[in-house]
Length: 138
Image 1: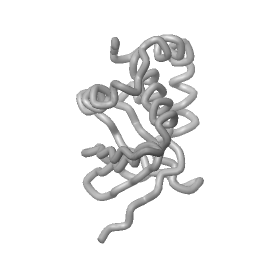
Image 2 (image 1 turned 90 degrees about the vertical axis):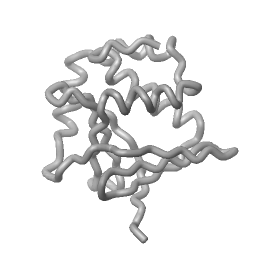
Image 3 (image 1 turned 60 degrees about the vertical axis):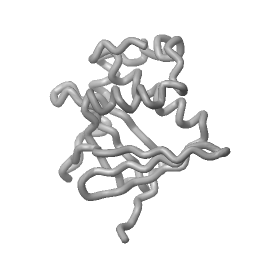
Image 4 (image 1 turned 180 degrees about the vertical axis):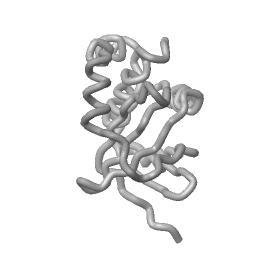
């Protein structure tokens, strides 16, 4: 059985050159694991979790998603020397306390336990990162 890496923190960074979202899973600082999320896959994810996204909150946070802010994030979180793999699946197991998210790429499984508020915050942050570049409207 493969080891499942436990995620401590998420950092979404839009990469303009790749036109993809790079989701950084912080495992145990400084250890991290980066994956790419394509536009189509991310839209499918956001559609499946739409109950947790409030459009007015995304619009309010959009001001913090300036090009300058994005460039600063890319400098703070440069791609690792490791190969960045494409995220293949996300599974959500909901329970009374929140959700357990399981992320898989071609080689690795990562997992995070989130409260419903943490899930909402993560989805809103991810949406704010790509909304400006992809013209997403909810």
